[in-house]
Length: 260
Image (tube, rainbow, N blue to C red; front, side, top):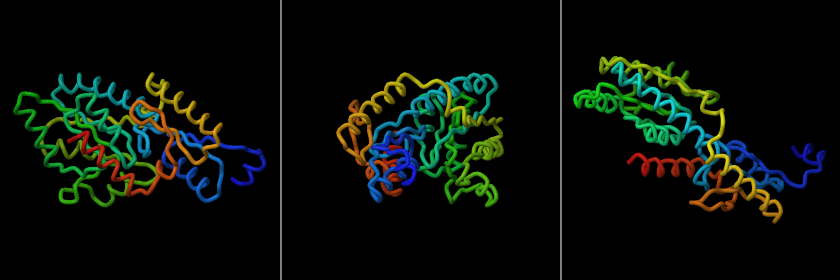
């Protein structure tokens, strides 16, 4: 990277990306004095120091639209619909998409779930005269160790570091087994990562770009453009992608406030 930097005679670099890209930018700035500025872009919204990353709102919009569409079949056929969404180690997409779409159960990585409580919720809805439900589960959501229904082989297949996915299918099978309710699963997958950005994301990306340009012009290296409330500010890259424990505490705090 040093050789490429010198070959292209770079005066500075704006790094646009998520936790992985920005962690690399932090290390290059902190340890090798590369002149870098960061912009947070990830659908997972798992970058500290900013309220939102661009890409997140678009992904939530896609999930919400999918849940709205699945409601029709769930209600008319009296079924449980399990919707598996992205979210590597974080439940932002599941939480926001589930709440916006009116899901009945939302399962996130930050809080291991108990299958018994999920099934109790679904059967209670039947007793209330609502024989259908929507369950949103993040791809990295785990069952509670006290009530795990996954074999070691299933765990290894679902929670691979290189590619998460598959918890929705196993969860749907367990729900149907425990409740006798017809259950179907929809895995949205990469459809969440593409398509036309929402107006919010387009404007946020533009505002981040302007701030990044201002940081470069002022020589404020090692900073990242961030959204705080309605204001665009800058935060140190070391704060934006700090320790994994700090990131975990942030996700736990926000999910508790969001989900109660």
